[in-house]
Length: 82
Image 1 (cartoon, one colour):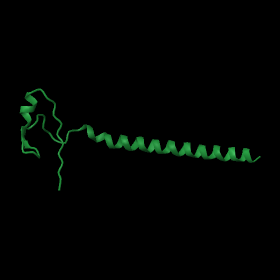
Image 2 (tube, rainbow, N blue to C red):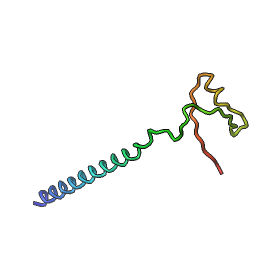
Image 3 (cartoon, rainbow, N blue to C red):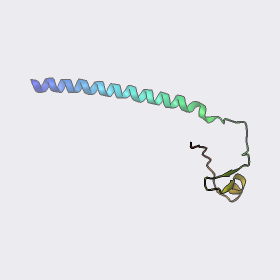
Image 4 (cartoon, helix red, strand yellow):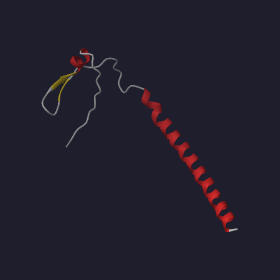
């Protein structure tokens, strides 16, 4: 009899966990969809890259158009340190 009660409690707990997991996954999907809806638009009206030169932490200068002209891909990551 104890075994049956234990099994019943485990099944109820399992159903609760499954229900909770479904709700959490549904919430995560909705939040992900909401966050990605507006990211498909550019933050600027520019259609062409602006040429600039930046100096790295070792003092070397890098020019955007020179790098692009050499056929390399460029990923720009702006960050700062204090």
